[in-house]
Each structure stands twice: as C-alpha cells, then as structure tokens.
Length: 495
Image (cartoon, rainbow, N blue to C red; front, side, top):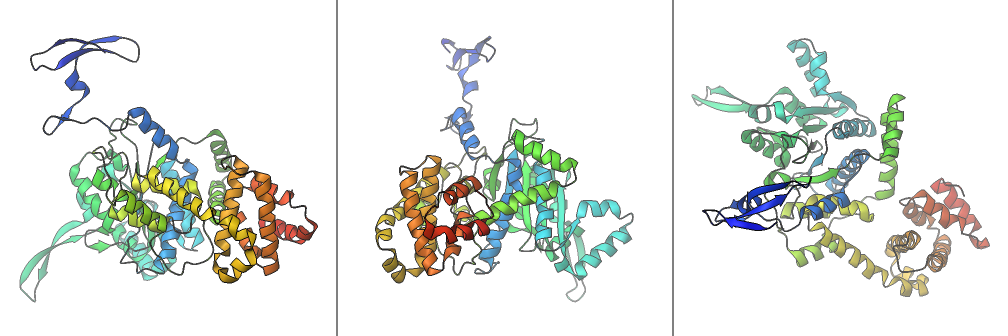
C-alpha cells in the first residue's frame, strides 16, 4: 500500500490490492483500523494468520465431541464425591466449528451414551412433544417420569434462534397470597425445566452464536453459569452443552460475548478426516453408529482415566505455578473468539486435569479454559514433569530402598518412565529408545518381584497399541517370559 494524499480529516488514503490482484483506489486508513473509545485502534496483538494457526493446533475431530463430554462428566463425578456439589458447579461446554460437520449429531450421541453407561432410560423431550398428541397425554407422561426420576435421562435440544426470553426464564404469572392479602408475580418455567431439575440429563443449546437478540443472550447467562431456569435450579448432574459457528462461517454467526465465553469450556471442531468419516458412515449405513463411536470413546477413556478413586483434591502444583507466574486474570478480546483465564476457569482447570497425564488432552482443556495463556500453562506442565524425571536415574540405581521408603510413589515412577519411553519411541525425546527400554525392563522385573504388575499394565493401557506391541515384543529376557505372557493377556495385544 502507498499513500497518495490526505483527505479533509487528515486520514491518509491508500491504494489497496485485493486478493484477485485488483487495485482498490482511495481506501481510507480509518477503514482499515476502526477506532474505539477515544480514538484507540482495535489492532489485534496476534495476527490473523497466527490466530488460524492457534485454532488449528488445538482443534478436535467431531468424533472426539462425545469423548470430551464424557471426560468432563466423569471428572466432575469423581471430584463431586469429595467436594459438596453445591460448592462447585459443573462447567458448561461449547463446541464451535463449521456448519454441517456433525456437532449436533455427536452431542445427541453423547447423551444416549451417558444414558446407556448409567443404565438409564433415554428420553428425548423434543420427540416426546411430537409423540404426545394432546396436552393431557404429555402431562401424564411427564408425571410418570417425575414419579421415578432416577430411572430416566432427559435430553432437550433448544434452538436459541427460535426462542423468546421467557422460554429460558419462565413466564411471569400473578399469584394471590390470601394469607398476607397481596398479589405477587412468579416466573413459571416450562415442563422441560422441571424434568431437568428432577432427572439427570443434557440441555443442548444449539446455534448459540446465531443469537441476534441481546435479551436472549442475557437470559442464557443464568442457564450457562448458574444452571437455573428462572427460579428452578437444574439437577447437579445435568450437563449444559452448546454448539455454534464462528463469525465468518455463516452469515448471521457472531463470536461469543467475552462474559458468556468465560462461562464455558470452549472446544474448536474441525472437519472430520477421510478415514474417520468413512468408518462412521459405514457404521451408520449398517445401523451401528452408536456402537462405533461408543467403542472409540470408552477405549480412550480407559487409557486416560485411572480406575482408582481420588482420596483428596488439592491445588495441582502445575496450576499453582501457573497462577504464581501469570496471575489469575488474563487478557481478553471483545470478539470472544477465545476464552481467557479467570478465577472460575482456573478452578475448573484444576479439577478437569486431575489424574490426566496425556499432554494432548491437557492442551485442549487448557486452551478451552485459558485461551492464549494455554501455551504458557502447557510449558509449565511439561517443565515440571521434566523436573520429576530428573530424579529417575537416581531412583532406579537403588529402587528397592526407594520403594521401601516411598511405596506410594511406584505408580508415579511407572508413569514417568513409560512417558519418557514413549517420547523416545516417537522421536520427541532426547534419550535413546534402546537404553530406556533396558531400564524399563529392569523396573518391570522389580515390580514383578513385588507382585505389582498391575501398575505397569494399567499405565501401558493408556498408550497406542503399536507402542505396546513394540515394548512387549522386545522383552526377550527369559526371566521376563512369565511377565510377558501376563502383560499380553491383560492388555489384549499380540506380537
């Protein structure tokens, strides 16, 4: 661009070259950088190209949507046994991505999956409305559900582009108080609110970024954060999940307001790759799509989450180091495209990463809660993990004496050794794979003497099958032949 002249407002005029190479004459600089407030330019700190790279780095596949919904649900359920549910609220979840990639379908599938896992009868409220021909029949079915609420799982798809504020907060009705001789007004919600109060369920707020009315946006704040429909508080085990498009992906889509975005954990969904899509389409044509996705989700959950129940919840040392380094309040943009660090998102982060060692999952959870600060948190997370690894060589020189002094540290040692071994296998680590493999086999032999092979099989089960096969295939020591057979049986792999 080159300046040709100045207009009356002393705003330079430029010639711009469009993407097609056509020169656009007389383009004022003020149009390039719109002002806000006292003439301050809304220039982004991060360039558009870098923003695209950030989203690409943290995006998830559509088939991962049920996985993250169930992961958050199970993490909150594990922690809820230690912390009173009224003291900590389950975070709402929002999936943002291009239209037509299967976000809504995968959210529905997650609801059916949760119902099957907990042996509950799945009830789609939208289908219930269409099946019940009369109001009397609908009320009869609702009363039947409310008589035994622990038997049902309620799913309700609420399209926010077609609702009025009173659909979210309830309709104001005058109520006569004869005892005090006064008339008061109360907000009376619709039937589905009572079902989601009494039963476990999933409230799906679809097209949340297509809302064009500020009163509807304000009404959704209470649902997303407080889990309340008017005066009715939702069941503590009810999930609030939203989906939408980013600005530019559809004509009416807008980015979330920062205040609303900070009430979510945000996930960014990309288009499915060819193999995943063809596998899903093949199963759908055969009528087994639910089983196909459920197999993927449950298999991955078993690798990520430990079967052991947590005994106490404290501040994770990596979360503590992040807060001490970066503070508890992060910078945010008015466009609401990404989340930002705040006291509530840091609190959710401390719970959701509990017991998770998979760095890829930690990255996406951190980005969904901290936005651009996620990179700093992941750096701290990896750095503190490396500090733990520095003592491994010293520990393995005399593992028996260390185990006698610290028997509770054996699972942690196993996680660190296998993590370093996997990094060497993928080429990300500085150590040689063969040397680490010999060290790992010595540790396995020691655990076999203690009768603690379950620690190894549990930790290995969280890693890819090819990696497990390589580790077991190279176990050629005759003293480990029994161990080899035990691991093959427990992990269900062949070589």
